[in-house]
Amino acid sequence: MKLALTHFETTLLMALFISVVLGVVTKKTDRERLRYGLTSFGWFMVTIFGLGWLMYLGHR
Amino acid sequence: MSEKPEILYPPLPPVSKWLPVVVVAWLLPGGGHFYLKKTYRGLILAGAILIPFVMGLMMRGYIFEPTGGDLLTTIIYYGGFLANVATGLPFFMTKWFGYESADVAGHVVDYGTKFLVTAGLCNILAMVDAWEIAVGRKD
Image (cartoon, rainbow over all chains, first blue to last red; front, side, top):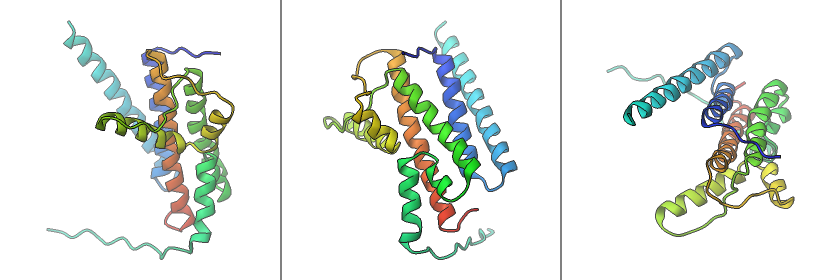
């Protein structure tokens, strides 16, 4: 079985998995972990969409 | 200028107390946390490391071999190999059962390679976390 995801799907999943790990290992309470994981995922999203638009506009 | 408050850590316990934790954490992603009875965190880490590893294999990602050459090639191949080895048992099982794929060009394969490397790097973070719990620097 071969998995073929788009670049966008792959990036989203990568951001999700890394955020989960960062959230679990960096903070000391569950509340802080959840908050850090969500913040990390949010910044990944900002970067993904920011760079996506930058590349789109750069190629016009 | 204000001085930063000094953080005092408890003295390191003997190696025999934390080495088994680190080895288990390396071999089985999330295993160090299971060993320390941090079951939920262990489960979350195991999922967040093993799922991308399996997805990387399903995308026919390349498992790095330590290859020398010019500086960039050496850094990429040795670094990638170390990250792959850091995944522990899943890496060895991939080798033993012949699931590794050839280093071919292609975007999906490339994503798979990144997933495999990321899984290993995340397992290093999990190992460090397990070590910190084992030596009493963290709960």
